[in-house]
Image (cartoon, rainbow, N blue to C red; front, side):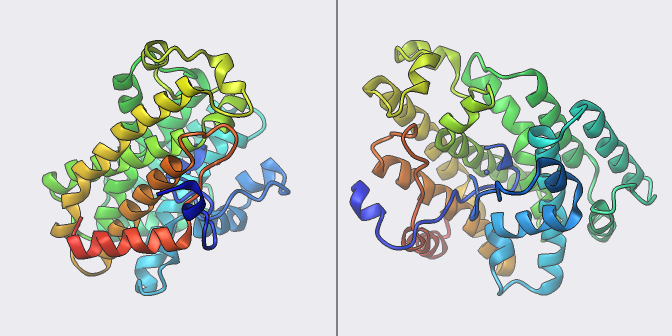
Length: 315
């Protein structure tokens, strides 16, 4: 696959995991930059609109309306906490604490203070969802306020346990498909998706003073942070991205057997996540691992090809 062939067809923006808004494996549409940050954070309509455009399963009109509504409640929550962590003016920690208090209210069967979370409360009740996955998403954004570098890959994977894996758990709850085995496979997919998103967004993350590339890997490949400020990626940076991308690809493959255990809407939705991640991997490779001069984006054709492959092979 060459860069030219990957660019044929209509390019998509990042195809992302719903919790990957801090960079989002990551979205079908970029954030509307013209909206004021505080409006995007506080306006339920704006938050849900972004969530609707950023998440592959929600866009599948074949999903029953009730399923789409519950997924939107989950993605809206993930979008809200990401926007607070990335965009909110004022004391972000206090605002995240307030969301955490609303999660506690929902767990107690009470009405949350934020109107956006009213739908989430109904979803939690409908599927008996525990509060822990929601709390971990909030904790991930707390961590983003204080931790801007990662020493090694294990530290980064621990972060993904907070920032990405909970969304997979929540989706499985909505599809009444939770088992220990499926949760483990979902974790591999979600971590892989989050990592792909980070590797797409190296330049953007650096603008926020965040570097997700593990420090020991950067040292191993002879890459300094100043190298990430270059207009195009030098050879050591490309080798580093290729190495990290192989790790993400391996995690996606590790979780792929999840597809064969699911049926109907659940299978189609999770297959969409996996296909989106693999298409993004292919786009980065087609760009010869230069993630500094561009954000490599898969085409619709590539995404459709990956989705067909995942569904036919059941992973």
